Image: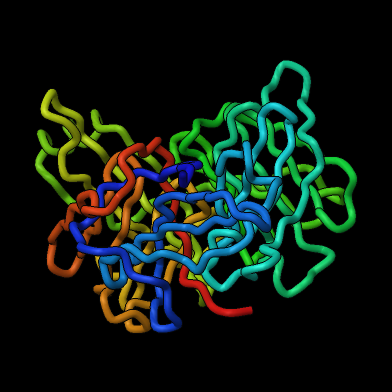
Length: 360
């Protein structure tokens, strides 16, 4: 019998039968589940993905199922790779199993050092992970960073380090505070609670463990009635720092309002970085991000060009978390997705986005 190992639970636009992955399938994706089945030559598995570009369920090619993933849980994704944690052994690996282009006979699995904990901190709950580059092609200086719930960050170079370098953050951060890597600045960024400061650490974390702070100064805030502003202030809010492929930086504020009937249609406010002076980043409100789509979830957030994918509308924000929706800022419209007909019945909660895949 196939075994459901994990399920990520967005609400998805209704679709029909599951398609087999082909080179014409593009993404971005939400991974739905991994299914493992016994085989005479060892266990085999496949990943079930939702392609947001075409609003279809896609089944990846069947491949050997790595033994390192048997009792592991997906706890983060970055650059299309998943980090799987085994709490029993306090260990983690990075794997490309979710990638439809991964090797059918030997999906890549990269072991990470066992977690170590700063006294009085914890490493049981992982908020997210970020990588300075993709594991393919090979880069011995590639850095993996993990953000744990609380104050601990951990960094390592998997090809060089035998243990993690643990760094305490100067503030207690929430599970919505996420680590992300800036290719432009070659630094790992983390928003401070409240979203008023950006804290960052150098790529060479052994050389400089002290964070750099930038104040985020918001400009051109939209005017709104006082009652609407009060209601907005009472909403749940997540702050996300995102970098586009061209190096533009955005601050996305995601507001969610809860009622006895459930969560209402979310609201987002987007601020584009205009310049940095004297330790301050000037962020200007915008409702036009051009040909970009921003993807927000529990993974490392990212942007893609809408014109590269036939089903994506430009100037849109895709949210995967409290709700699974896309917001079109040009049309002021919201699209709520629902479970596809062929979604597995048992579906634990853990939302992630995966960027478009390409062959190595």
